[in-house]
Image (cartoon, rainbow, N blue to C red; front, side, top):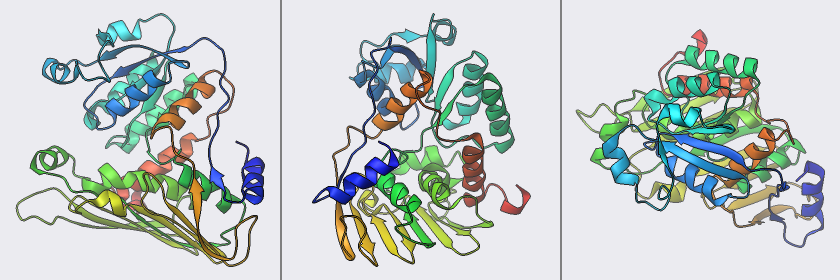
Length: 357
């Protein structure tokens, strides 16, 4: 949906229902495969590609760990999907796209193999622990004219899309404050797994909100982390806050792994001198818009915006990627955006000092 069409629809509807449409093409289906099944989003990504069967032909999945494959083989997502070796997948005639869904430590190495083979990739988050390795990966993709689509969850969320549109149109005025929360409660087994990475909950969860923050405000002047662990003797940083300093704005992103039913309070709030958007919870999004003056069909004051039901968390990403691969649209996220986001993720996670970047 084009921006003008989007806002005109909001201006003429009695209750603005936000939806996103993508033109379907009768072109030949895109052959895709997946490497890895251990990432938290692996099942959702493959399930979505299978559901979009008019766009994608899923040729197989690579999972070298026999025990892991035995655990997932009969799940509906993976049932009837051929198990391939890496060489078999990369040697599939006509293969165009690979979803990289390994453990975090293997994401960048696997992504490089795919790019060197001339493939577009969906790379799940976070984009590894080495910024230098990620820079080299993007240079490789740029040189080969291949896409790296990051797996940040909210790029295609209808609440965030509404926010991005009205912010671009100036409805909120000058943005001076952003506040995001991305938390949940996890048990001992998951804590042990996440403790393998020193970035804690910000590295695992907070990255999802740093991406839309950069979409709105760009690169900050400074990133200051305040990172804590709540359990004695447990190395996992599970109570994390990062402050992002801009010339005329500040933003805070919080992420905890100790909040009971934290999904209910996940939120993204953007305040401008002419209006505020509060999305809470984030999935499914509930969006409150507060305006200083009427805009389109929205009155002055606070009101809920009707958002159409989403087809699924990952549908927008995979539908857009199909259009990009077919040459119908340019990829909307630049290499510089994704690299800047990762710089900030590492700084907010306490893995790099911002001034050294």
